[in-house]
Image (cartoon, rainbow, N blue to C red; front, side, top):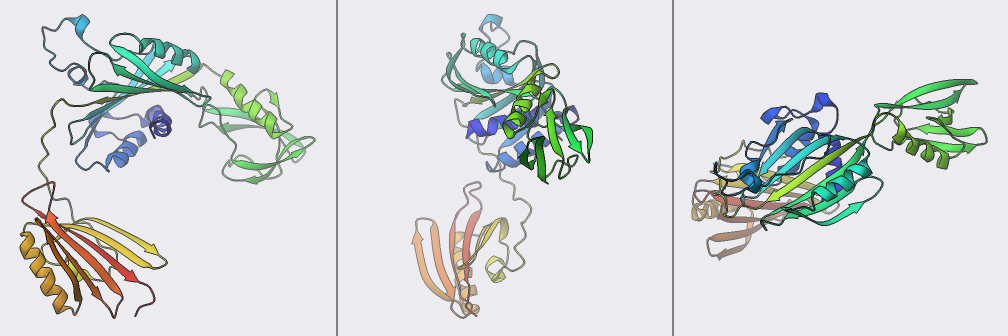
Length: 381
């Protein structure tokens, strides 16, 4: 999974300078993507630094670091030759693990930068443990020779050296020079083609607005085009346009020697239920909804609602029994195991059936969680 994600993050972190991270507030597209990506780890913290390293990076890389530590003994991350630091991310997870992302823009060809970086990362206190290299990107995995709690991953990817690239087309009997936007080192034209003796005819334009149907592509850059093979040859020739630039993205994983204390849980803003939720009495009272998922399938609609409450599990279970009886629902199961209680129930006329699991809330032992699973079977009135 890392190999697939890393190139995308390089593109996000090394894009337009106007979209660069802006301090710890982080207003860039890359920052927003990371925040959405990391939301799966509830309680993780993300800090963003524009053109700076995380201020506590030296401490993370050197546990026990003091003012008296000799400079030669201080571990640091190798800076790519002619590399410009664009910014960094620091993700602190609930289990004490730290992830640090460092993004550099490097002047030079990606193959040369990759070879140089491998050499830098294979010298004490670092050791290369694996890698991958292809036309799209290079990847290097490495680890610390000093600590088994520190490992890293570096991605090397060529960047577009010009914002646009030239395409020559024949249009209505005239030669037209176009400058198409370039979003990748080897771009693609988002259109469909038909090969003609005179060039490559555009039969359908998907998103390249400068192109038109019936345009005949005759050249990309300085490369003449008579087939789709020629088209891709022209794309590859674009590497010679402008000064070559390469993105380098480090990802460091640093395992804390001792687990971090769980953060104090703060009940989040209550989440709204779907408009067609069929049994609101099951989420009534002081139950705070913190997570809702639902799915519509051929067999029926499925809902899962996670709630928390300061009441005891015994009180919640007893109130559920009373509410189900009051609404005319049948209690089909009532099981207790340890602290947890699982209630199964159904409403035969409406085709609704569900399960409520009442247990301690793992993020705050002063709260009780209720996980409600409800299914509405289609075709039942």
